Length: 79
Image (cartoon, rainbow, N blue to C red):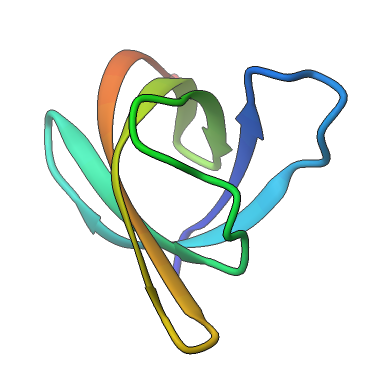
């Protein structure tokens, strides 16, 4: 399991801890507990393999489970 830290563009907000579900060259899907993420929000993400900026494409809330899909805008991989 790859853990992500997601920061909303509002720097005053706390990081959102998320688990990576799916990953492709253009985006990723993550599971988290935040009901604050909405479509078109830009976020910064960090994980063991790299970091970058992404845009929230969708968020689905089912009970206590929250999933979001992200489009990667810019990514920097660790070397």
